[in-house]
Length: 67
Image 1 (cartoon, one colour):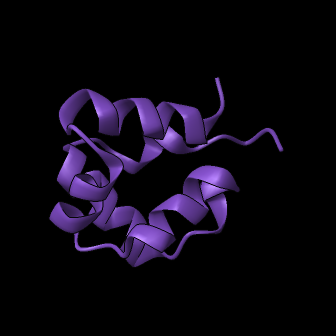
Image 2 (cartoon, rainbow, N blue to C red):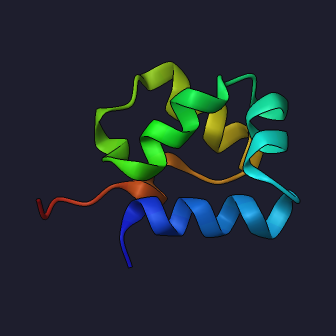
């Protein structure tokens, strides 16, 4: 399972919609959608921290050394 799919599943397990999560995490919805449709590896550190804090997960859950 890709990191983006894992992130999407985590969000939708805890929030009724991606839009509601983006508001709660204080991340623009367009930024969230870009991360989910591309590679979250290119996200800014601040964005990753906001996502992880809101979901109560560690950033390492999305780390992968295989490209």
